[in-house]
Amino acid sequence: MTPKVPLKVSYPSDAELTVERSFDAKRPRVFEAMVRPELVKQWLYGPDDWPMAVCEIDFRVGGKYRYVWRNKEKGDMGMGGVFKEIAAPERIVQTELFDEDWTGGETVLTTRFDERGGRTIVTVTVRYSSKAARESALKTGMIGGWGVAYDRLAEMLTSGTA
Image 1: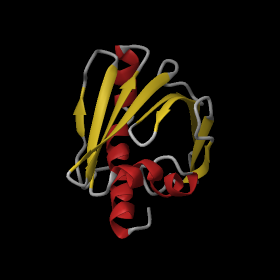
Image 2: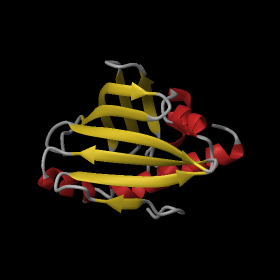
Image 3: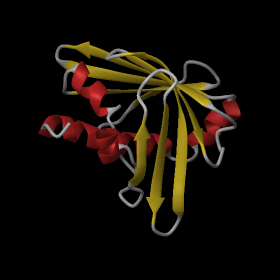
Image 4: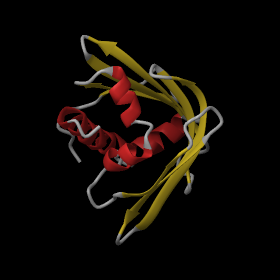
């Protein structure tokens, strides 16, 4: 999977990775598109043959979320977590754990939304349990899938459907 707009990826520590992408929309719209289930379900998936079958979001501190992607041949891939901090529309901190724990335990994601000149820069920092867990996650092709999903989100924001 090759995204139309490459993500800016960095590694702030041995157990972390940071992904950054700019969107041509104001911060409140981007923030809403990332937390409303009916919108998230339309963009948060990688390859076209892995659509999101379940998207449940209880968006409050302590609230849980659950995502399940479904492939006709390979079955389901699910994950969920808990929202730890919410400062709308600037920041979200949440946990994440896949049903098949291939990341070596729970990860913590911190998402920042920074508005600059009418555009929104989304920066997600993922903290894994170890460097090995981060490297294992990277081997799945997640960066390409993330980029393709963000391309979909950008198209929704540009077209006004988000």
